[in-house]
Image (cartoon, rainbow over all chains, first blue to last red; front, side, top):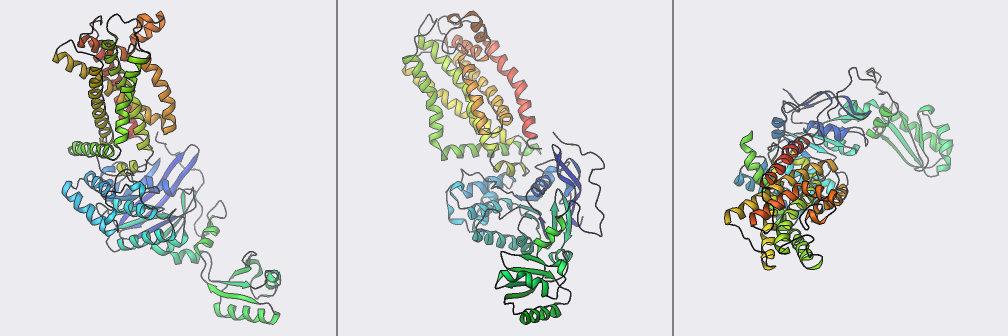
Length: 332
Length: 253
């Protein structure tokens, strides 16, 4: 009972394609966990299974200590869901929405009204009056949606791509709101395609591709998977990239070149020695650099590396057989 | 957990009423449309094919029944629109009673249809239509009409879930019209080719229309159709109500 979310080998099939292909996940209570992956990786399907909207084809899913299939109602009392699209009644106003959801959570009419006021104030929507939600801005809509998913102070909150389609300001608003939840004891599971978002908000990250988790850990642990530190060199003249690759004291096979950005990048073992060596070599050859920087690998690089092949690239863990051991039963 | 079934259903009914308050024009259009049909048939293309007595006495009850049947479209459109909105996901991820969404829909639609009947009665009266039977018979006729509407409601809910997208609703609407007019709502079966007349007589809508005419004491109305006007809608309900509820529970599962 220490984990707020337990997912064991969950499968979901659409036709011949597995949206979830034996996915495992553990999320500790009170933590923020990011599920990171490209479009079509199965993130939304996973959230819909965990929030009882979709019946899994196989495997076991427990949320807040209850099974999502056999104890769906118990799960529903304990979760909040912020889907990819606003789950609001667009014809009604913000207060009307929140009061309605409060009553459907069986708070009682008076308590529902009080709760709606609290949430409107907390999310800066107190002055929206009777304005219909369809006339809200994207950021306001998202905040109201988030408020609606917090009606009962849920044990587990699901956020499915909470900032997709928002402008930077709206994104900052949602991030601030998520951060304010942490420490209140709420477990947050968020899906995102933005590596920065996972890096910023989550304690732990699961990289998901083709319906399964390909890597799991803290942002730092995942970055370590892509190798150690890297050095980036931006040249003033892109035409000299070839020369630079030939003369720099770096392992030539591991240098990647980005012609558009006049950038070459390579992993390094000894940071200071590499930096000094690169600067000296460039000086001696008379190649002018605009920028030379040491950095940790980005999650982008981790992700590309781990999903470059069909098989997960993590050598320590042998890949599971591609065919499921038992054919998943598909719910009609 | 059924303790909340009533309060949840009431919450969902209130939601529909709040929509009315926000969009009174839509409600008005819904009420005016049958009136337009009634005026059109009584003044423009009327004349009453095969009707012996007063055509208005024949037509008004027919329009009542036709309006109940066409209510299917409104239900279907509302349900499809709702299902394609994100809010349905929130409802389904909350611990509310299973059928509350559908009960809210049906309560609102029944209320709208009852209002529609009141308006039509008023307009019919202005056109010279009169009830010749007693008050009990009148209320019985209203009951039969609303029963037909209730059966149409659940057909509409099921069709909406099967059709899925609002664009598909139009296709179904195109089919609803001929079914509505293939009845004795505006003309007698005797005025039609024999095979068509048979189809028309079997139409549940015709049964209700005939029974209602009889209860209103319309001259020349065939008696003895009340049982069919009760049995047909009940039979439709027995089929479509469980199918609709089942389909709703399994939505996107």
